[in-house]
Amino acid sequence: MFKEKGMAEEEVLGDLEKLLARDATYSSGHPIASMSTIPNQLGVEVFSKTLEKNAGRLHTFKGSARVEQQVVHMLGDLLHLDSPVGTTTSGGTESNMLAMLAARENAPKEVKKPEVIAPKSVHSSVDKAAWLLGVHLVKTEVDDVFKAIPFEIEEQISENTIAIFCTAGTTYLGQVDPIAEIGSIARERDIPLHVDAAFGGFVIPFLKDAGHRSYDFDFKVEGVTSVSTDPHKMGMAPIPAGSLLFRDTKMLDMITRKVPYLRGASATQASLLGTRPASSILATWAIMRHLGRQGYRELVKECMQRTEHAHDRIKQNTLIEAAIEPVMNILGITSKERDLDETVEEMEKRGWRMATSPIPPTMRLVVMPHVTEGAINAFFNDLDLVTTTIPAN
Ligand SMILES: Cc1ncc(COP(=O)(O)O)c(C=O)c1O
Image (tube, rainbow, N blue to C red; front, side):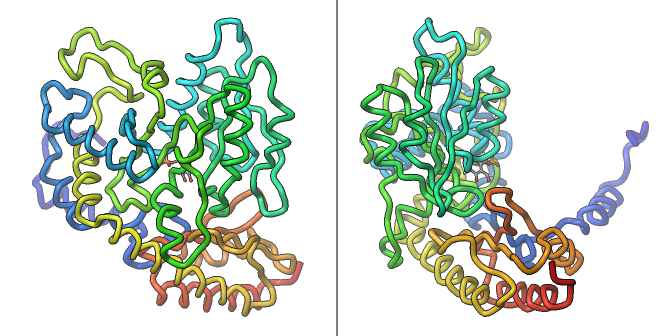
């Protein structure tokens, strides 16, 4: 595979084009369950002009360091935190790992078997973080609309509890856990509460103006100690762009390590990664400034209108149903009448790039900006056909 002699540029590009022809494109609308989308054009421009910049070496890239701080502050504004501290990350997985690491390092020395409590609807990266960090993850039940049950969480608190993790915008259904109630419990017991708003962070703040129910999910809730939000999801930024904000510098200190061979701003790093692209941070900065709250509000409004349209199409097909009333631009489709895996297989054969979720068993729709009304109609035309042609359960 790795040849001795280099190939001509055109030949390389031709081969690559052939290989990438197998990729789905967002513009086709086929990735119907993706949480990423076509990044904002200004962000793409900034990203591609700044590829050499390394956010692991902020002493060398002092301008990028300043931009990262401004991103943290803009996100603090969005999430109701006046003096935010934190770091940009590669996405929701890294943010959850760092939030759990901070909690583990913050725990009293007497805690020998650290435990994190989380509803079973948390993203799988929370399991991954627990696995990597030697933390026992205690999963609690969810209610009939798949929200965390505060009482169930409270019941599990022990002297080993180092943190509670909740979600604002669950991966499976876009559900928001009752953060205010869980926040009170966390505060009363002096336990850190991390809110994973990887998806919801750029949606929930704009729901009310789009005519939908709003939720207190961020630092407005006093017991919340950290919030993660991904610009590379509904923030419209190019991958990899995540963030983790803490209320308290003490928690940031818990994940900050010295890098002995670097100087100045690079001599300590809070991210899990060393060398990492500054370009996605710079693109995030540009997009947030360019779109402003108004731009995001319009995006959320549009996505919610299309979500309602998709919800109507679900209601029109008697063989399927929505798992819950949509909270944000995520829909889970269930069926008592048809086998989900078979349905998904058939839809994949028709070019749709599908996703399924375990809790509850659903196929998922994430109505990102690339999922246009045309794509939704084409999807449901196919789904109507598939559900009527495959055998009944
Ligand atoms: C709620 C939530 N948290 C974390 C993640 C992980 O994000 P990433 O894939 O960017 O690491 C996801 C991804 O879907 C998510 O939905």
